[in-house]
Length: 81
Image (cartoon, rainbow, N blue to C red):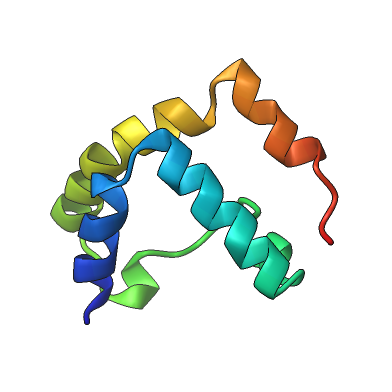
């Protein structure tokens, strides 16, 4: 399965399913929290050009909107187990 396939599958999840997946990942590996925190990534270094980045941003827009809702802040406050 490619990264694109995985991203497409993630986009099909409901907000509740994405939250459950995040909690499961944190349960499996507390260090995942560090990987899930925002950071600067040079997409060009990873072989992603401007049009691919724009496409990715557009496909992840609904996920970002859901993630940035005020009620989602609880996931920022929930300590890793």
